[in-house]
Length: 247
Image (cartoon, rainbow, N blue to C red; front, side):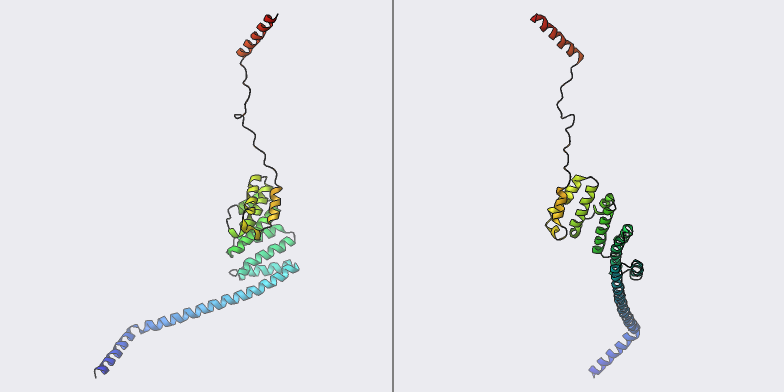
């Protein structure tokens, strides 16, 4: 009998609790289901966008290889605007830069790479764009812009590649000591062997003009003291006296 009463009390307690909190429980379940559905829907949309961007990028690659500039520009525009949050948006900038260089439109190539550098693309992709941009700037005889672009970069994976272009820029600017330092850092870095042609870098270093030794300052040079007029008169009198003695 006591057990039956105990169960009845438990049922009554549950009913009382449910009447007070049941709406919250149902609401939580509904919200949780909605969030789960929304997350799944978001992931599905993201996946769909990635697939569509992948197809568009493959089309762009074919257009770049074929040299079809008008079609490539239209596809790149679609990738960079409709699929800006995918990795293919940044890659389209690299592809267009290559096509522009093939068409001898180096400034357009530089602009395309600058857009990638300033974008929210993957960090490694932005470093690749920065390196290619630096080479184009060097091609355009804008050596100081190359220095401004790369001098503050300190990334191990790109250190050697950046250093070689920096050395070339310093050489173009006539800053031989800085160029020598940039090349030597590459030659002394064992990790640079897989990223740059060390033999070529060594040739560049050997081909640098010799740094001229600084002339000694006037303070360090020993100069004969100038004789004052009074001393010159005394010397002249001594010479005359010596002549008279001989006579």
